[in-house]
Amino acid sequence: MKLLCCGIRDLRNIADARLEFTDGLNLIRGNNAQGKTTVLEAIYFFARGKSFRTNKEAEFISFDSETCGVSIKYADRIRENTMECRYSKSENRKLFKNGVQINRTSDFIGSFRAVLFTPDHLSLIKNAASDRRLFLDVALSQITPGYINRVKTYNNLLTQRNALLKDRRAEDGEYRILFETLAEQMAPVAAAITVTRRRYCEKLDGYVRSYFEQMTGGAEQIKTVYESCASQDKEALNDTDAVKELYRAKFTDNLSREIYMKTSLYGPQKDDIDIQLNGYSSRRFCSQGQQRSLAIAMKLAEGDISNESTGEYPVYLLDDISGELDSKRNGFFMSQLGDRQILITSCSMKNSKKFNNVITMKNGEAVR
Ligand SMILES: Nc1ncnc2c1ncn2[C@@H]1O[C@H](COP(=O)(O)OP(=O)(O)O)[C@@H](O)[C@H]1O
Ligand SMILES: [Mg+2]
Image (cartoon, rainbow, N blue to C red; front, side, top):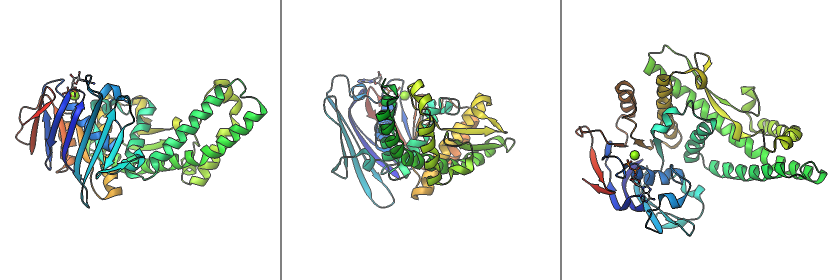
């Protein structure tokens, strides 16, 4: 996958910019607060279907503007494509692919694929479980048709269920029927999400282990496991029908406790990825250096699995991470990316010789 160019209008401090990219290593440099991350934010809209910095349009549309627009041109294995997002502070956003308006975000995601790596990801191992689930969901929605729809459907049902659990009539007989109906609807969707995530984690395991071994000389043993509240027994998580039954039981057998707690206690919204280091949970026991190496391994793996599923590597968007990593880890990471297309932002890289393309951001303008 190759990003050819990007157009930005009224996004944060960028009033109007057009940036062109080449194969290999593209550097977006500039002092702080000049618009470097905004460029990556614009491009990643197309991979994730929304901003990676905020859910609120009013935050990324320029303060003095009502609307903003971003567009990209990219080439996949088959052809060149264009995509465009138009946002407004007062109206729904509009999405276009190759000039045709697309109504559902799920039809938009998966076309342009990218791996984003920001300093926030360096603590992915120790962050809240929701960050690791987000890692899985963002990666999976780019490579698994229908996945993002299932997550949305599940979240809608979960919101309904949580509202019912908070209702003071929740114990009433007629509510029981509503809970049963919801359990029927939620169990298959929850099972599909869990099994898809678990299979992803199996692939992740192989890649993460191999990268971590290379980084540490094989001294440490790594195992990546998907942890699901559906069952402690990992083998039970292989079969979607079996997981569906497990969830159906969880959704019905614990109702009194859930009504007491006023929230759902089971479902894929409680799951996590556990990375075990020498048999111990890395979440609890790994050092900051190990944590960073694991984050690098996971981000490299994300690109590898995308390539495995789609036949081409995604574009890598690296936001200021070289400043956060020591030279050994940084060198390893960059060497593993080889000659794939990378966009890297930095305020410190003076030596621009090894880059195939250098763009300087100054006051929201792209200058060469
Ligand atoms: N909605 C907005 N309208 C205008 N400017 C904004 C908006 N949101 C953020 N900014 C400003 O945009 C600038 C660029 O931010 P950013 O892309 O994060 O810079 P960099 O990555 O180069 O450090 C910052 O000065 C920030 O204050
Ligand atoms: Mg930045």
